[in-house]
Length: 390
Image (tube, rainbow, N blue to C red; front, side, top):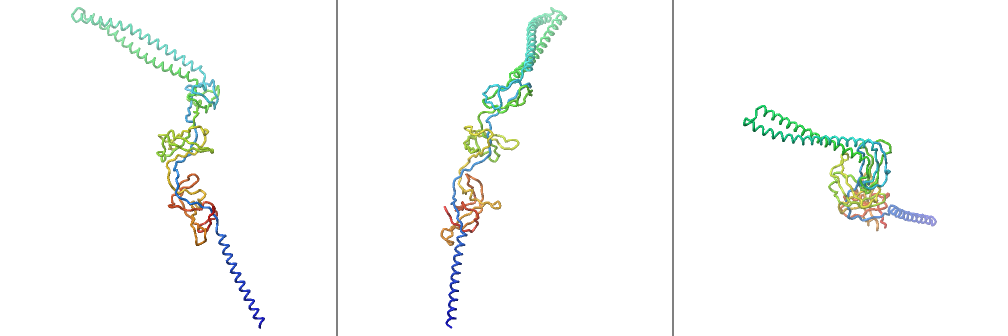
């Protein structure tokens, strides 16, 4: 009987040990689970801060002035004085066409002018002589008329004198008309001569300003038509050009300061001119921005920021924004002392992004300061417990 009682006692002890061990095991597992579920993140307290509202555009660098040159007459290219890309000074010759035909036309115009001038001189001489005759015949007519009125001259004699005077007066008037017509012809001939002379003078095209020969699509010996582009000269100074929609037009003014950036470089510029009428194709207004120095090469594309006003708002690090199904979220943090000291509860909050300023995102639906998860977002979800590390 004593042996059986001892066996039961051993079984009880073993059961008690197992229960105790089981309880310890469960407690250890719970603590382990709690530690596993707690993640470490970095945070940032977001409060209102200043930002500069601005307009942003993509601009391009181009010569401040570009002038297209052409010949006013058709002809064969005789000489090229420079090459494409050459730097030229104002008045320097660029290209010339042959003068043979132009000189022949000029000679013809000069001959025509001389002929008309001779004709005009003859009319003037004739009129001078006729004026003397007309004065003499007018005196004779007036004297004869007085004698006729007192009966000292017959009617036939008076009529003959009057007829001669009227004929001379008519001839004088006709000669005056012819002389006036000749004067008109001379004016026209002088215009023709001037144009012919101008064509000869413009058989050579010259640089209209200091600059660079940007385009010279000519070869010696080829025939070029009047009015065809013969060369383009660009100014040495460059500007940045942007296209502004009508909604932004009244927010931009001349002398306004702008920031230009591209190719790792940043520079300041000034709005120098604003078009008064829109482009027919794009319906946008061209704005020219003066660059104090030629910091950028022609053709460079630049980001152009035009500051408008300094405002206050909530700016969130770009890395703290999570996009899911085209909706932007942030994760806010709230201390949860019931879960343990130093633990924070995560809450997912939708935000409305209205702009980006220096790698920070402006949102307009926060109304108070808030602590958010700034780093360690991977795997985070609403209601998670996290610890915050520096």
